[in-house]
Image (cartoon, rainbow, N blue to C red):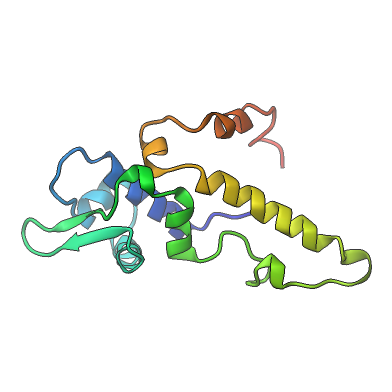
Length: 152
C-alpha cells in the first residue's frame, strides 16, 4: 500500500489544525510553513477538505481554516478518503467489485482482508490520538513487531 503525498499532506495539515490551541483560524501559509508543504498544493488539499466537510474556511484578514468537528471525531481514514478516495483499491476498483479465475481466485479474499485491516487501523485512529501522541494500544503494538518498517 502506498500513501500518496496528497494524503500525507492532508493528514499533516489536519493535525496542525487539531493541535492549534487558539480559537482563531489558521492561515494556509502558516500550515504550509509549519509542515513544510508546498503552499499552492496545500490550498487545493484544503479546498477538498472543505468540500468534504472536514474543515471550515473563513475569508478576510482574520480568516483561515479550522476543523469542522472536534479532532476526536475525525479519523485518519476520513482525511485520506476525502482527498484520495477509497483506502484500498486494485487498479482503481474496490476489491468486492473484482473477480478472478483459476489459481488467482484466492486473490480476492486476500485483497478484501487487506482492505479490512487497513480500514480497521485508519478508522480507529483520530486526529486527536495522533496530535496528542496517544495512539490506541492495538495500533502501537503493531509498531513493536521486529522489522515492521525496516523489512521490504
